[in-house]
Image 1 (spheres, rainbow, N blue to C red):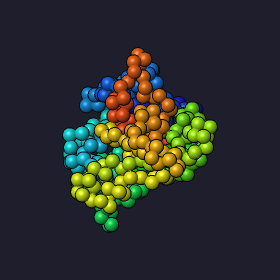
Image 2 (image 1 turned 30 degrees about the vertical axis):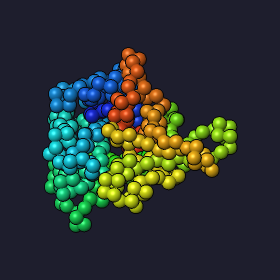
Image 3 (image 1 turned 90 degrees about the vertical axis):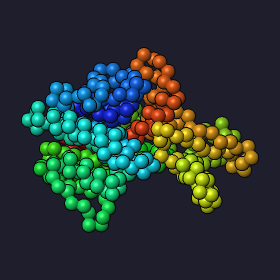
Length: 353
């Protein structure tokens, strides 16, 4: 049986390597430039090579791998950013990843990589008048891809060109994992198969998430309506958690939109808003019938790890046992990928290959 291998570009805190290792896929190398995430990843994957700046990597000279994953910077594609699209200084690093993939394929006569996985924000569907996602598909397939007759990109689809099979799907973290995560986090996941027609099997086939190894998904924070506090600690009182939609709240306050402002206060069963690298995530807490004794606070880094489906303490320490600052942990987690979504895709790749 062939040992599948993985390389992770824009690696962050090693979510794709973690998901891969759950399915017997060996993480071989990673590329990341942020100091804290690199140290965190080195702690968890001490034998994995770290290649540094993606612009200085030659795909023909690094160890070839079966799978290359990359969640390229999304600041220019996000709906809350400047919307400069793939031409922006951050998001155009997407093309560096494509360059590395092409260099590796040339150096190995098209043998490696077999699969590429791209992750990004939902805004990539609409940025640059919807032309950016068209450019993404054309870059993977090397073919001209027509715009949909509807004028917009569907949340799931597939194209094929030059023997490259490409499928994409919008996954919301709140519907993934066992138990499901309590965070609304919608991200595009695209799978490109350079040597077959397996992308649809990887991305669209239903799988029993309960079969995921417990060691790769333990200690997840479940739905927002259940805080996980033991009954004996609550004295049989019912805890109420209501997350805020902070950005909506600020925007509504600025516009003096009373309805929007009130609507930004979450309901009991609402998921937490998408965690972002540069924002504070607030929520209110009280026991049923004791609203006046309630309080407002922000999520801790540990709670953010749970909302991402990560093992508790994943970002707490670096390679040399140094404590990672809360600021660096919040930033790294806000930029990360929800583990259950990455697990689902890695399960499909391991099954298909």
